[in-house]
Length: 138
Image (cartoon, rainbow, N blue to C red):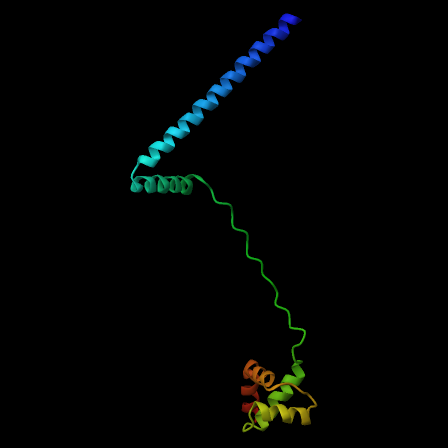
């Protein structure tokens, strides 16, 4: 039994020395190649990089691109209701000479809806098709 343990010990020592010797050789080779690369002109170093990129482009398969995620656009929580926008469009068609400020004050009195001038302007821009349809009906 002792002889077997001694043989296994010698075998492991031999394998470990070979592995360490091989690692030292590889490290020495890497250092020498790096020194040689540093001696090369810059053009050749760039070519080596471009050759590596070319090899990657040819042999490496890129991962598939996942399909784009389609988000359904929700209506904003503070959006003016459609029936009020339609009433505002009717007021604009009935009183085309009023600007957004005048239309805002008129809407406050007539339909009891209060908003700023910019909101009135955005509604009129957003509902252009409705304005055209109302003007054609008139």
